[in-house]
Amino acid sequence: MSSSDFRQIAIRTEAGKAERLFRAAVSAFCSLTRPSRREIAQLEDLTLPLFDEVSVGSRRYVAAALSECDYAPTALVRRLAEEPVEIAAPLLTRSNALSDIDLIALIGRHGLPHARAIARRKELNPTIADLIRALERPTLVKTRPPETVTKLTPKPEPVAKADTDRPATGEAAENARRRLRSMMRRTGDTADVNTFLGQPAYVKLRETALTGNAAFFQTALADALGIDFATARSVTGQSSYGALLAALRALDLSEDRAFLIAVAVYPGEFPHPQAIRLFLDRYRLLHREAALDKVRAWKAETLSRAIRGDAPDAVDIEGREASNSDEASAGLKAS
Image (cartoon, rainbow, N blue to C red):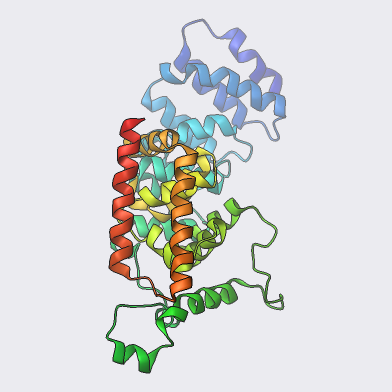
């Protein structure tokens, strides 16, 4: 079937035959060897208005057909990918029209069913594969840091053991941070240059969050906010994303960027669309100045500890962050 045949389908088909038109248009499009941008736009203009009028069987048929198409219309593929996995599976598994960002967003919105289909993709981005494994087994999200980092990170141990095994606790957090910086440098770079030099703070946060290594992300967050490593670790070490929400709002990230980072750090917090809606509502209602006030308080505590030469106590940090989360909730209710 030629491209001219495809363009005439809408004219020849009787009005009200949405089902037939939907299938025929996609079939004709898939027969084109190399469709033009105009033909791709025509297919989207023709099929998207019909989408809600066609049956599940037609959507399944179209999803399977487009999954094998090298030039599938991105908007139509994304719309089909939002369908239940029984319909979307061929596209989730094979379609090149879905980018890595699309896949992460789909996992965040639809949870395990979509994630398991995406896991079957060939040449899947390793960071997305790690995210899916963490979603499959949430207990693995907060894993113990590598042995080399653990030894350098302050722990609530007896003083006698700490004196023999580790440097002074006041130096341990900064030593761990320096060690992480060195792990993130490219070979041959100077001491002050890391892998993400010259890129916006968002890129650093996104790339480190998608590594699945909490310590890398915490280091990037500390750099972005101007706080110490221990405080950054306390922000992301809680059971909910309340403190991280304030950190991302203080950085003035857009809603979609903030969500991408949040779902990478807390994949288990977004099992259904309602959870995503709640995150976006909380993010919109949190005034940036209130978030900046919280970050200023973190910086003040960092400076205070540095002046006193104290090491942060894990229990005190967790208690402080829990209090901050309560204050944030109260602020949202007031808003």
